[in-house]
Length: 449
Image 1 (cartoon, rainbow, N blue to C red):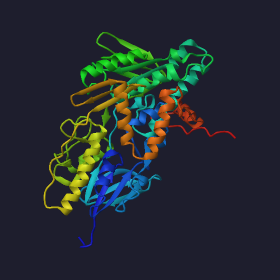
Image 2: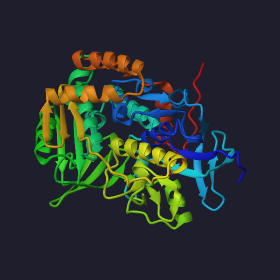
Image 3: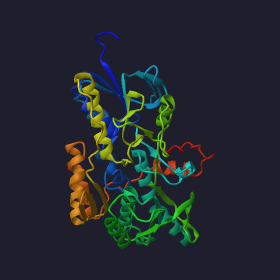
Image 4: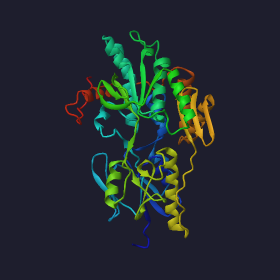
C-alpha cells in the first residue's frame, strides 16, 4: 500500500447510524464515502406525521450533502448498494439509471437499516404499505385522504363504510401513533368539509396478535394508552392475528373465531426484516443472522472474523437491542470513533455499551407517554416532553421553526397543512389496483392537457 494512501471508509446508508458514523470521522485521517439510495436523511420518528398531513417532507428530511457540507473529508454517492466483496474489499452499487459502480474500502460501515416484514406474505405490501421511506409516507397520506374522497363519491352504503374503515396492523409506536392520527383526522379535522358523508363515522381499527399495545413500554403506560385510544375512537383488537389481506379487506383470526374486516385502507406497522444487502454480506463473510435476517455482530459491532466491517442499527443484532433511533445513533458514533482510534491511538476500543434514554410515543394531541428509566409520564406533560425531545433532535434550526408552526396549525387548530394529494398519486394507485400481474406495476396514464 502506498505511503500516501488515505484510509478509505465506506458507509452504506445515511440514516441515524450512517450519518453519526460519518460525523464521528470528521477529524480523522480518512476519506469517507457515503452511499445512500436517496439524496436525503429522514428523521424517521416524525415520518408518520407526513403520512397524517401534519408535516411536509422537507420538515422531516435533510439532503445528505447538506448534512455533510462542512465535512471536507466526506463525499456522497447516490445509489443502491447491492453487493459486498470482502476479499477485494469493494462495495458494488447501482446508480439511479441502473449503472453499476464499485467503491473500494479499508473499513466498511453497513447502516442500511431494515425493510418491512410481511412475515412471508410480501404480496400484502401492495394493499398495506408500511412507513419506512418518504415514498411510503406520501403513499399512506394519499390513501388516507383519498379514502374520504372516495367515500364521498360512493352510492352504496356498504362501499361508503368500506372506504371509511382504516385497519392498522401492528400495535407498536408507529401503529399506535398512526391510529391516533387517523382518528383525529376523522373526528376533528374533516367534519364539516363533506356534504354526503360524515367523517366521524370512520372506523379506525388497530390490530395485533400481542396482548397489549406498546409491548416494549411499561405495562402501566400501555394500559393508559389503550384507554386513551379507545376514548378517541380507535378500536383496538389485541390477540388477533392477520391471516389474509387483499384489496378490500383483512382477515383476522383470534382464539375464538375468524373474521373478515372490510377496509379499503390498510397500513402495515408490524415487524422488520434484514435487507438484501445484509443477507448477501452475511453469505459472503459466513456470518450468522437472526430470525429477521439481521447480522449477528460482536461486542464491538463488527462482523466476527472481519474487524474491518461494522454493522449498525436495524441491520445488526446484538443482545436483543431494540431497532430504535438511539441504538443506531450511538452505534454510529461508536463505530466512527473506533475507526479513528485504530488509526490515531494505541489503546483499543471498549465494547459498545448502549445507554437507554427511554421510550416515548404520542397517542394524540396533548397526550403522549414517556418511559424513561424509573420515570413514567403520560398525558399533557408527556406530550410536552415528546415535543421538546423531537424538536431538539431535528437536524436543522429551520426545520424546528416550521415544525412548530405546523404543530400549532394541527394541534391548536384543526387544520392539516399537508392534506394535499396529487393527481399522479391517485393515478398511481389506480394503476396498482388494476396491475396486470402480482408484482407488475402498470405505467400511470399520462395526464391529458
